[in-house]
Length: 276
Image (cartoon, rainbow, N blue to C red; front, side):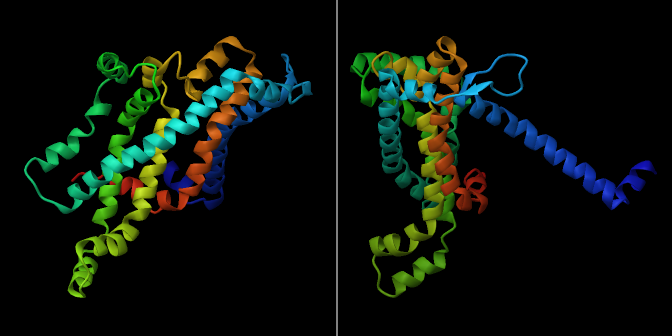
């Protein structure tokens, strides 16, 4: 009876909803606000709620630090290479899973999750042993290959859903009009499936950009990316340094997610992880 009374009072129900939204917003945004304050704080001592003074000296320190510049360079070079290599390898596989029917298709499709089904650290150690024999330890391509593992699932599953969304009738109509297989693919199939491919590319880039464990095992100490350097800065430097670097680390992810927002809302991410 009491619950029914509560549901019948629109003002109270609306007030509770607003309170929940505000609480959730505070839970999500207050840590980010604290991060921004630390990045510009010069002096911030307890029990003050806000910094006593502000400065850009930590930003200057970060950009003048050679290790930071080196980490930024490797991050912005390895992640795009991993994304492109993943697309070259995985998109043909995604198209095959979508359009072809062959023995073991379902098992192979699900087996792509194997890289994420076990603790990553043990997997990276095993791969590092192989890379040592191949001379890939502390090399650019060794880091690229180890980061490639985290992109396989999204670069196959989501584009496969994108290819599934292409109406077969359009392809058949184009072939009936005299278009060849390649012409049908480039002019019909690929443009319609492109939003799903773009979403997969964004997620693959973010997975490579944020990967730390495998890069640490295979690349360190010669190849140091931003996520790896983040651990050192947080552990050995004042809080503002870690805050500044955290903001720099999050900027590419934020920009890409904003660009892909329309496609994510359209449901391509959820469609890519449906069972086949």
